[in-house]
Amino acid sequence: MIEVLGPAGAGKTSLVDAVRRLDPGVRAGVRAPRAVWFALALVRVLPSLPRWLPRARRERWFAWNEVKSIGFLEAWLPRVRRGSGTATLLDHGPLFRLARLEEFGPPLVGSPAFRRWWRRCLEAWLDALDLVVVLDAPDAVLLERVDRRGHWYLSAASPEERGPRRGRRARAAARRRPATSSRPRRGPRPRSRGAE
Image 1 (tube, rainbow, N blue to C red):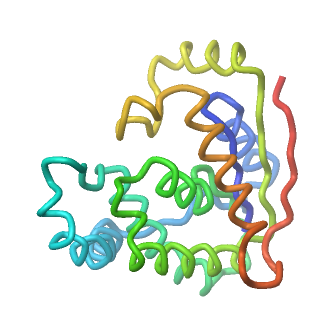
Image 2 (image 1 turned 90 degrees about the vertical axis):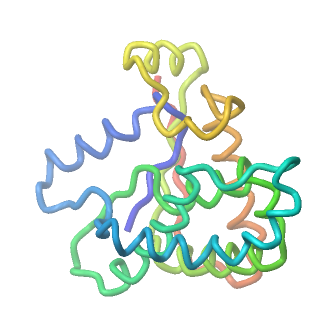
Image 3 (image 1 turned 135 degrees about the horizontal axis):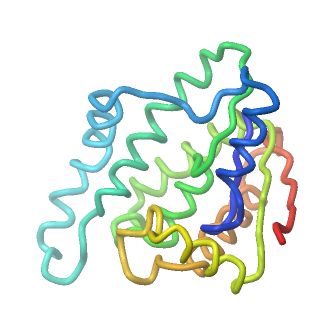
């Protein structure tokens, strides 16, 4: 299980596609039925509703992409643990999603209950991942690549998430978390590459 991290335009999808062309047996992503991940997301976020309602005028609720990330994090893990012996590459995988929730999520992500879930989820994914590949490129290159695409993928949650800085902030948070994990490191080996 390999996660490919990096800001938009760094070449994550291109790398995954190239590896799959070289070896068609490599799987890209983990599939989970919508009904499964949506139910798991609801189980995780709905208990926070009573805590949020009195603050609704001051604080935002989870954005749709954040709800999806929570559901994916919960739904993918059992499928990964069952495993098929097939190499799997994850673009916008668990470390990206956990870092994104922590860095850009609503204030509720700081609640003790959510922090406990977040830490348990991080530990489980660190055990599941074998390798993390970090791609990067200069901001000018990233902006040019993303402008050619014509859209900012996975950036609809908030204006501060748009552009290369979003990817850099989420990636920096992902890098910090495994190093501060409370358990001995058995998880993924990070590998960094610049994409010029």
